[in-house]
Image (cartoon, rainbow, N blue to C red):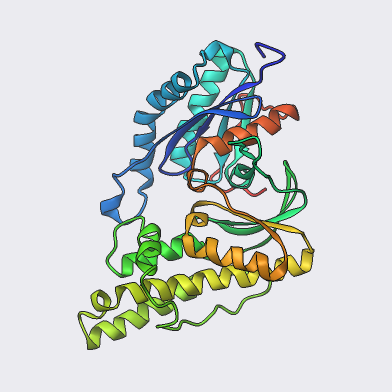
Length: 342
């Protein structure tokens, strides 16, 4: 560590198709740079090989941009953090290899961060002096394209998954429903926008029947597919003529399923505060319904800023900050893991 009074960390996120780097100093984010990959749009989803190649092209300029925006020289860094998993192995390897090499060259500690834990700790990124943060323990509904979980957060570094999906993630269900309707990837934001002018009760889809500590979205996706196939057979223009109502209806059933499970977890664990995180937490309908659930159950609700919902390095940085204070460092033998639990 270069300065005992200044903890400055470079954080790298490369779990999927966004290359991101952030600089954090004493818990304050100084820079947060993200390079997106548009190459996947025509394929209807992320292509792992293309993602890893794009990471290799983006990582050096993204890190350089973060250092420049923060006004930090690399020799001022106290540690380098990176996403160890879960995620796409090729993408993770690019970030991990860069982080390990950078840390080794500077002779500073290496910090590995769990991507899902980081999504939750994004709530502790302070953008202002009066910003409220959750108090422990609290429940966090973590929803993204690859994961859907309800997590009991006991401390910054102590978390327990209390409910999870048995199959598809909620974000995956949004994207697949959108693909069925002819939308480009990612479809989730498009569905959210179109649904604002639609009737969420126009078309009914059955709720999955699973245990209280489980969720399931493959059935919703399948029933939606067969419903549209039947309707299109009778009327080829059905999707175009009912697009907004279709978006509102499929969005409604996905969000309803999520919040029924969250409500049961709140009742079971009796926590005073709840939060959401992950890419799907940017969905306006989910935000609205969670806010109403908080009022109904007299719970304080925490909803992240849009810039911290999708994959970003600021969330890796804040997690690394707490791990640094805890002395949680790893050696150069550490390897990324595509599948990684808390």
